[in-house]
Length: 280
Ligand SMILES: C[C@](O)(CO)[C@H](O)COP(=O)(O)OP(=O)(O)OC[C@H]1O[C@@H](n2ccc(N)nc2=O)[C@H](O)[C@@H]1O
Ligand SMILES: Nc1ncnc2c1ncn2[C@@H]1O[C@H](COP(=O)(O)OP(=O)(O)OP(=O)(O)O)[C@@H](O)[C@H]1O
Image (cartoon, rainbow, N blue to C red; front, side, top):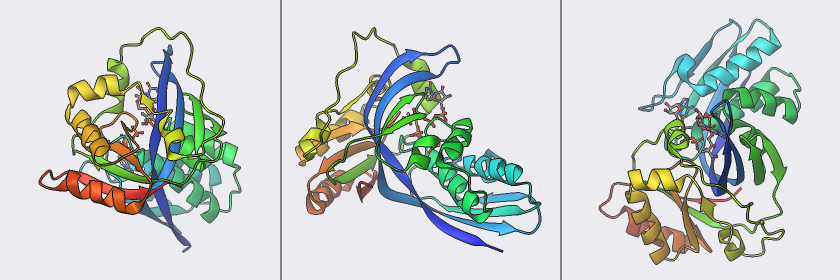
């Protein structure tokens, strides 16, 4: 049967403002997000018989119905109603529960891949709506562009062009629950949101918007995050910040060599995960 292998990239948040807690427990946000080319590899094969199999083989990631990729496949197979099934293999390269949106990206990739394999011709908008039922970050990965994300993350607008930069991602290996971070956040009264620039000419322009409200929860619980930020800046990053709910820290660099040099320093004797990636 038909088969597709696709890349599911990670994301970083250049900015994450939490605006308010909603009655449903979710939070209205204003985020600037970009994808980076650290990718999971997803192979989707349609089967002649109904049923969904998801294998990942990574500690901490469920196989089967607990996997968000399984739920994405189920949504499109139900919609297609063609009596077929799917086998999905995920080669996991993105750290799990890390603030890099790995599961959300896997789900978005399965939605887009199944749309093609099943010949459904669902619009980007429709896939984003289905994605939102799976997770707040999923629509961003269907959008596939640097974005300003509002609402819970589902209201997406393209960002002005950004210069390409190198990104060093460092994860100290502690798992952080996104739900716990949002639950623990002390909301402060906002006098209004800082204006975002309309043009991004340089790496400094990107770093000028760096801010993540969720750092106030995750960093006190895991001070190693502050330590990684400090080392990154000392080793030449133009800016360094926690991504999403953490604990991954990312730093922006002008060139690959300087990012690799910082990676070598950060991984010597620490056992931390580190990857150098480019923005997409
Ligand atoms: C931290 C970010 O990754 C930043 O991009 C996202 O806001 C989180 O997106 P996500 O992991 O796809 O979020 P979901 O899987 O939908 O929700 C996980 C948990 O985060 C909380 N959550 C998520 C998004 C949001 N706007 N407000 C929230 O309060 C909810 O309590 C929820 O229980
Ligand atoms: N395909 C998947 N990949 C990774 N985690 C998955 C997947 N499916 C389900 N999960 C579960 O989701 C949880 C966190 O997933 P994920 O790695 O997407 O978090 P994250 O990178 O912190 O996301 P975010 O940036 O949206 O907060 C884990 O506890 C994991 O068991």
